[in-house]
Length: 295
Ligand SMILES: C[S@@+](CC[C@H](N)C(=O)[O-])C[C@H]1O[C@@H](n2cnc3c(N)ncnc32)[C@H](O)[C@@H]1O
Image 1 (cartoon, rainbow, N blue to C red):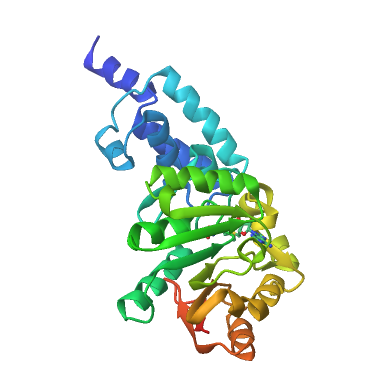
Image 2 (tube, rainbow, N blue to C red; image 1 turned 180 degrees about the horizontal axis):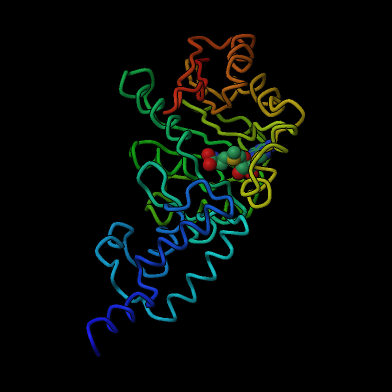
């Protein structure tokens, strides 16, 4: 084959580099705001390699079987399915968590709740012995804290039995299942007559109207019951905060994730219910995100 013919043939091969460029464009046109990242995560998943390794394989022909599996995932992503559900996992606080459509996809904002709690421990504000995570979903809060605080025991609850199955499997994956008890039920109902040093929760706080404004990826794929609280977004907090003190040890802490729009109202709700040292911790983008206070 002449040099010219070889180069033309190579241009027609769907190499890894060519697949990335084409798919990035295609996903952008189909509404993805993170098309390059989506492309690379999906392609590294089907290739079974780290994302960073794609950069050393640009000229490689991945073969028909890989291309066909990749095409199938890209089609679903273009239809709106989040990448985390397609690959079945998502990173949180540098740990890998399995997710399914029964669980919310972990958000980076939630890492701030972990940081607030680790800082409370570091500053001697409490000794972590018993910690409760309400609405655990995939288990990210309880499991990450269990990794970080090896002396602590945890209870993690959720209304959804299917989410709890995922959380339980993640606790096994991270080797902390012996320190986390999973219980099903509404808010504090599964922990009646028990007291904790700290209660953390990232409960549903999206209002009905906000939900309508959410992207297709969220609205059509993530569990409604994990996101939406009711007409104002405050409904779950209004049920939880007035009764939660009984489940906290004296001087125990309550740490709640919320939306920037609700943070002030949530602070007020904590103060009205006799919480002290009520504070707001902003997220990475500087938006008020974590509200916490002491019994
Ligand atoms: C926003 S998601 C948070 C999941 C996980 N903690 C995280 O940060 O990714 C809220 C979780 O609370 C659960 N939930 C909703 N209402 C609840 C209730 N009344 N009692 C207990 N859990 C509830 C949902 O099933 C969902 O898993």
